[in-house]
Image (cartoon, rainbow, N blue to C red; front, side, top):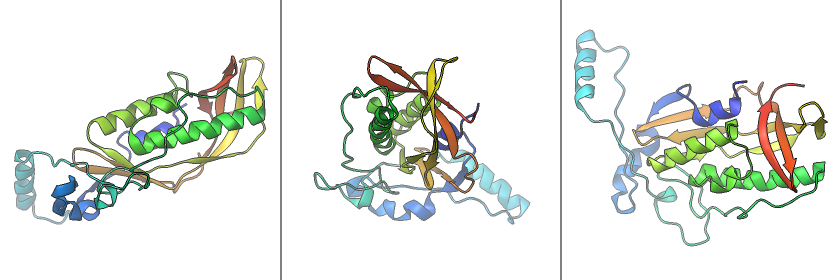
Length: 236
């Protein structure tokens, strides 16, 4: 299965590429708080062939624009004041998740408590680039695990994420698959938009306009008092 979760977070080239001018135009005046940003204007589709050729030659000779990550809200937030991410920089003072996953009973109530903890860690990673907490709730080789690798890489390279925070609504009871020896539970994912600010000067944006794939099953393992996400699918 090609997960819509991974595709949405990484975009993998499928998202629309948008010049930074509109969102980050004011950043050039924020040198003191490292929020400068530049963007190359896209050539008009109606330009003459000679003008297009000239623009292409000029673009090839010009280094790719870079984004300097500064402070959201155009200034450093006071300690304890949460600020969401924007075109100037990533979120600030995001509340930290619990350090380690908690033990919960092998019941639907126990699973839901783990999911609440995981979601805090998951959204923290999206906003900060620190997915060390979220990694502890998922198995390797899952779409979630791979998306965390991508998120950390984006932040390490100087990019960040605007929006993309998620919540989930349960749509079924917890089901145990005796043949596969795992659990599954159907959820509907709730999200609106996500924007990836890349250090090369492009935005990758996606909106949740097609909700046909928003419902799916999370797969789980349970061992020694701990729940873990082991995958996802659209099966029954």
